[in-house]
Image (cartoon, rainbow, N blue to C red; front, side):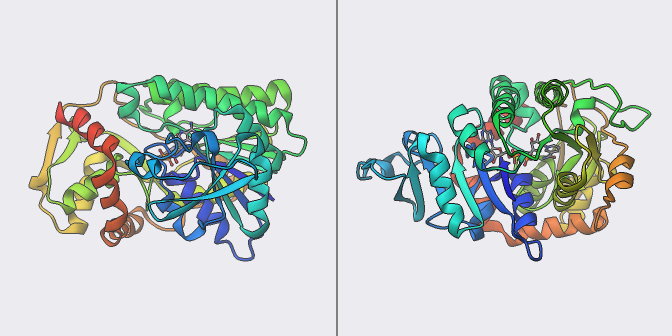
Length: 400
Ligand SMILES: NC(=O)c1ccc[n+]([C@@H]2O[C@H](COP(=O)([O-])OP(=O)(O)OC[C@H]3O[C@@H](n4cnc5c(N)ncnc54)[C@H](O)[C@@H]3O)[C@@H](O)[C@H]2O)c1
């Protein structure tokens, strides 16, 4: 099968891609469609990328897809001769191929002849590219999204463009496909809004309370509508809070690990008593694979970690693992509209598809802390070079 994975350079997407490619006897091929926003990182997939499988639409070679101070480098690039479907070029020691937008299908399928993976650096909202890549795909898993609640509070615009409109573009392209077997959309537990006494099951009403979760809820229902209206073979998954390797250092667990490692203050919102249900990212990947293979068409599946913990518990555990003092904790002004608890009932995926987690939260948290300790190069590059990261951290935490 050819699996089109959108957002495959992000945290969960890249872990999912690796999960699929590492399966014993795997013969599936993967096409990644990812715009390489601040959250997308080719380093997440380095072992699978080579000079013949990263393709950039020629009209975007002008920078949009690359964000790390490339202007001076590009100024020295030779002009393109646009007579072949693909053309090599090099940036900061990495090889890329450029292809004409209208030849993306041809360029991607050529890469797939010799590789298990092709990476197309483009936006899901680009209808021309979405349509061509959908022609190659047997199944789609849609991870691509703007994902950070705090950023959605500062600037909701891009969340509507990607999470809602981008999903619509993919659905339209999927509707035209003659061979698509399934479209799996990755939604979130946040669409239910705050859980007070109970845990939400799939039939509970949704009640999103911030611009991120509202844009995800709109996409979630749009995907459902394409099943009900046009018969598109879909599944929707609603995972809880993920953690694990390669998570961009703006979310709770990596922020706290990196600050603790550098002995900086750990900013904890409000009283730190907000409850999240923590799910290890490779368990999410496994659950999505099960849904892809066995999920009943049209159904929604919650995926929970079964690990509800207060944020402050997570922060103390990280400090304990790293042997750092709790005096590093600094309570800061809470996020507006902060949902006090997320809680999922995921008995459906456990009973129907045989999902279960593979280890305890304590074990996975320890592994995750160790991963960040060992992979300093990965996160230092982001902390040092990513101007957008610095600006966001200053703007958001600086005022608290
Ligand atoms: N991280 C969590 O805890 C969590 C929990 C539940 C659901 N989810 C959902 O899972 C999905 C993946 O989350 P994540 O944490 O890996 O996100 P992430 O922010 O780490 O990665 C998002 C990826 O999408 C890409 N992207 C963004 N806009 C794009 C666009 N317009 N076109 C193409 N690519 C684009 C980015 O470049 C990046 O590679 C999202 O849909 C998110 O809403 C995440």
